[in-house]
Length: 571
Image (cartoon, rainbow, N blue to C red; front, side, top):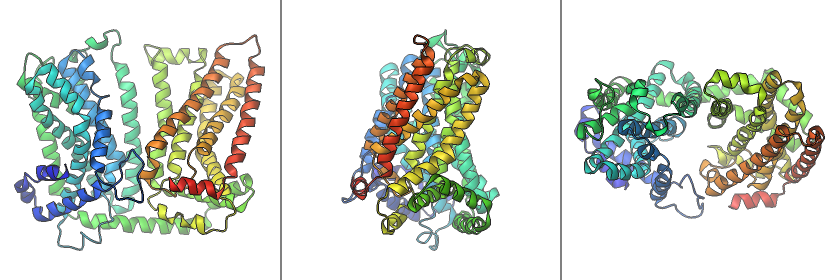
């Protein structure tokens, strides 16, 4: 598969040569990168650390086929052909852009090969092209099998012409997503400089992730639910400004009867779908690629300088004493204090952790607004009716999602091999380090966020919700402790991402969410219906039971033995 894709991207060799790239070097770099990708463990599925991984590409493609079946429903349910196709292509484009922003942008700015490629006579344009085409091939390997279900549906509904034009549309989607996102990145690198680039890009990624999440959930609320699947483009003419609509217009060129134009004067918009990625690509190579290697090398220098400044500043800063005071106040043993301090510092310094965890704090209010709007025609009506229903219970228990996500990424680190220090330290049991790490995460992220939601709850529902807030806090903490107690136990920032994203952990995450759902549902039932006027007493009993169970589970977790750690490492 990789050989076929490599030949595909090297077909326009004259174009790459005309842009200033060395095609022989470009082919050699891409060939090595693709071989390394094929030896990498699949993102879903437990890698075997003792055997060489083979055919990882085919395994990931099989997973993509299964995932892609979800996206084809607009092609079946929406009767307006162009509109349904625009929604389908838009979903694929948003998903690709989100993947680029959260995961694959690291490939473009990966500095690990600087000692091999950059000292060689390889020009900047070849380096930029190799990275862009590498990500392009990677995305093709995912989006082609993911779009297989939609390809089949289009063939059945509209015949052979749609089947032939579909791969062309998929290529345009990948081109537009790839070059638009990386065009913004390289433009930012050019003007912001290496010193501030990584910090800016991190928060940019977080903001865009939240924006995409909000768009997926809230934009459909703009549609009229009474029309259902009979909705047409004429109801929402603003869709003409979306690239997915431009690409969908290509089908109108093939079959006017099956794909009629509902927006007059937009027949030629398909030209935009072709010109947009080509223009962005030309500007990227012509103006942003020069001096790319020098800026790339400066990223490491900037990061090293930043770490030195942080280390020097923390010696005398008041923040150090603050988290030391917290560590001393909430932990008795020295190993627990060490786990607390390590976690407190690393969660602030790790860009990967911030990128994966910070957006979830924004997902909670977005999803809460989505639930409010699901039962009301407008946000104003939902806001007025909000104090009349116990929706705050759902809001409070959404913190379980934040805590679960933070705990999942607590163990991930790109420098996970540095975890040998845990095993070299004279620890009788590792439970102290684990408990200290959990307390740091709880105090630094979960509790402040829960406090903000509690203030919001008291403001709109009154002080009568105080007991509910305490009960929800105990139940969410109980859920989090059960999650780390039942799951594989690791030291903080001691595992690679491939290990953490195994199928076992995906299943465990779903089971953990069932526990949170059960606790929240029981609490919601108590608030919704007053059982013989004994709701307060029943809540107190619920609180005592949850607190007792929390103490038992916590005691077991804080006494984790070395045998349990070894068992988790061997899996």
